[in-house]
Amino acid sequence: MNYLNKFLQRVTRKIKSVKEEPSNSIESVVNLASSPIGQDEFEWNSYNSHYRSELDEIQKVHTLRISSEDYSFINNFLVSSKGILPLHPNHRLLYETILQLSPRSVIEIGCGGGDHLHNMSILSSTIDLYGCDLSEAQIDYLRERNPNLRASIQRFDITLPFSSLLPLVDISYTQAVIMHLKTVNNHLIALSNLFKLAKNQVILMENWSNHNFKSDIEFLFNNGMLPWTNLYFYFRRAPELNNHPHIMIVSCSKLDYEELLDYKLLLQNL
Image (cartoon, rainbow, N blue to C red; front, side, top):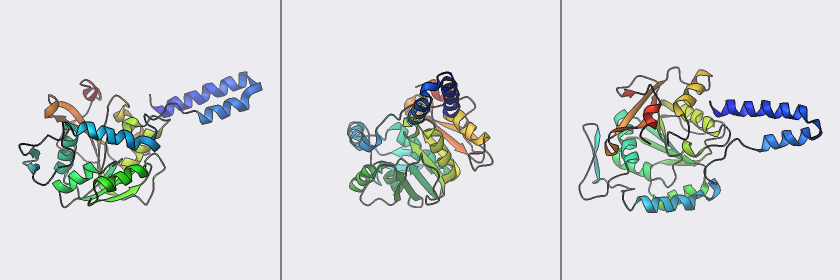
């Protein structure tokens, strides 16, 4: 059951209880309006300090920012040079998938310190790159960490109504972003915006247990909240993780990937 239905059920239950207890009806309705069903996993105003610490840990075992000699795209696969720490499996699979789809333009939602956009700029000189993040501190960190980044960056909260100031691109993607959104229907708004930004594909690399992303996207599509006329779900496997299904690709046209028919495929190896 999606969060919107849960919210409506809570409203119905609360209104019923208000009718039964008229003496405190106004207070009850006000409390309902101000209390979210869930809560995001982070306080976003202070998220940057956590983010920096997380990168410090990851870089002990993985390369975060590549140079032009580190990886090559050969026969549709990313191949690493010897003698460097490997990319995190999530990151390598994400970049490889984007390159396979040959987009002319891409936007990262929740671009953080800008490492993914930096790496994409190294791997392809022909893709127009865009990024957005809700945090001014994160964007400042991006400027500090990747001062020469070949990408257009702007501040935007993806859980707000869609803005015409955002670019329309071939592919929009997230890397560990939507999974943290748990306040009321924030993640549904974010998903809807991803599809409004993308003309061809939406790529998600998320914790699949935090939401049922497939059902949520189907709910949005079936209720006219997405601009696409067709919806196809696919997945790719991560060789570094015993070839487990690991990334979701949602496309407006058919692709030569394994079709995601059962969401449990993404859950079984978490």
